[in-house]
Image 1 (cartoon, rainbow, N blue to C red):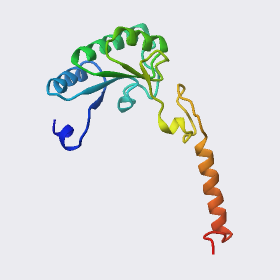
Image 2 (image 1 turned 180 degrees about the vertical axis):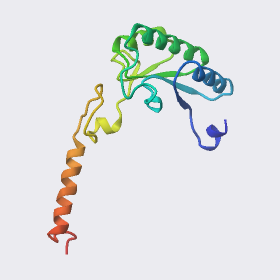
Image 3 (image 1 turned 30 degrees about the vertical axis):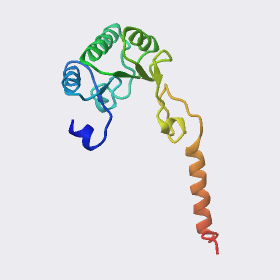
Length: 160
């Protein structure tokens, strides 16, 4: 509760499912702390997951995520973030739950969508397979820096 009061935080987002995070979600919710749960690819556990790989591809892995989603909802999560899972699994989980699902690389059937700002604006050279850039700011920024550097070398900057 202290974090919510002193930092004026509205909720927390926790990555992971069975068993620890389900218990943690229940613990926090019972104490009045709203929790958004996050399953699928969980970046904080990328090394345990073998890197940034799509999760839930095998029937057993998909079933585990379905069970984790239900358990997190029952534990009191107010929403569930689904990251880098097959679209069909994202749809299944969304249909199974009463709480909203937010997808990031989880198909178009989630209740909401996330696109990381750096990906959306084209800041990065390499996009995740589920992302799309709507601008190419990286290239524009590099060109601006190059022009600025040239102006310094030719003494055109700063203006007289």
